[in-house]
Image 1 (cartoon, rainbow, N blue to C red):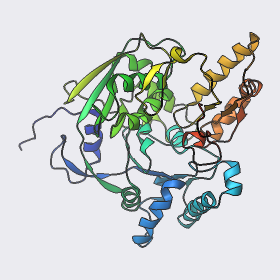
Image 2 (cartoon, rainbow, N blue to C red; image 1 turned 90 degrees about the vertical axis):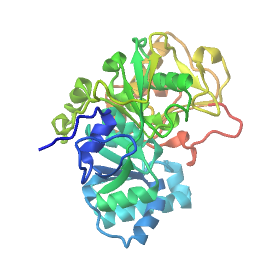
Image 3 (cartoon, rainbow, N blue to C red; image 1 turned 180 degrees about the horizontal axis):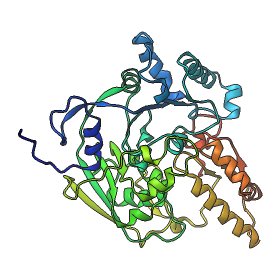
Image 4 (tube, rainbow, N blue to C red; image 1 turned 60 degrees about the horizontal axis):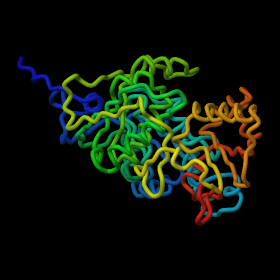
Length: 397
């Protein structure tokens, strides 16, 4: 029997090949259009508003697997908005009604979590395919999954059918080298990447595989943030190879699924990347993206002393370890007698109630409180700016 010749594949290509239906050969290449099994579909209440219209047009059929649809109320809500905004109340009620109608196991009501945070921490596994009705669905490549954001109609169809059509993307490799200084985060690393390579350029509609010797020292929180902002980079998906760091983190889950259920694919050494880009991290310093583009990146030192109207810490790019780091920095400042200055607002929002609880247990929230921060329940908050918490016209936050 004649066998197909071997073809080198990227990490993304291997995941897609493993999920392809009716594939006539054991490999895929860029440009192939595949019918693939989808492991998860995910959405927020903001996306569900449109998805429900598609679902209604389909005749409200049974879901392929109600236990594999994840719905979180997080985008348009905070306690004030929920009390007073009819539009937000309508969006929330629409999601609640659907969750009850289809007896969703993974429905999270307002101010419990941020969509990507809980899903990544509790349910995602390496090697899975995740289709989300949100651009930052790319976050889940941090654990080695193929995760993309699509339009609501595409996600609704996959939710019902358990499958979708994917064109295999071209891929680039971003190679991280050097050791970043202590205290620098995934946000600094992806901002350096955006600043050097530019948004919607080398990554546009391509798979971005984050590699290189420095990656072994990246925590799963750091990988989450970098993969998350592949959306700002312009990539179709961003992904890290699952490794010992991934497996060790997954092994800490108190409930299934654990690390042993994942698919730990690796790209071939001669994988067909159309370009490789090296980013050095040994000279990395804290960075800030200025309006109005995430690749308008400058060192934070250029803006020391700049007046601000407020400070917001939160959104799906702010992980648990960054909230801990922020609290420890505040602790040291307060112990040295450095008092908060100015009259601006200060707001911090955790990504999930479990994170909020752990920081309370560790006594870390008190440093935010002593520094004048208001602690709000989980939600997208000021990052999206559509609920009650938002910056005023002309303000710098």
